[in-house]
Image (tube, rainbow, N blue to C red; front, side, top):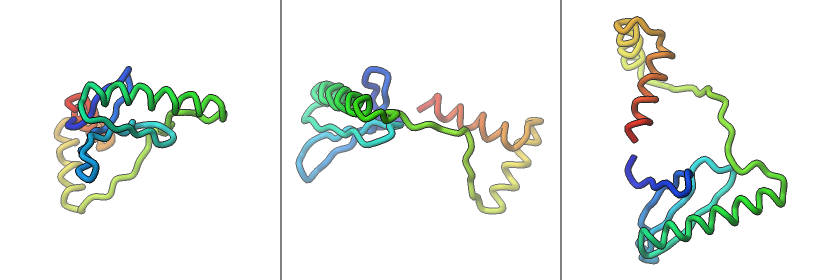
Length: 112
């Protein structure tokens, strides 16, 4: 996955903020926002650690779960032609559409 760094086991998306000339990081999968800025990647990691620590401390103080919970379910809307093509591709692999989509997502997520 492009523009994603791992800071102590937590993923953060990284982008350039041209208005202030700094690199911005924002943690993914948190129940709230935790962003951080720096001028270099090394400094961004340091700032990310600080930001995450503060976020986790605040969540603990307020009794808020720090990480989003996922149900494992989501809906996808596709063009009818793409839906048909996916069903046929799944059938060709002797899989249900759900299995086929889950496998495709897993492969893409591992490659990221």
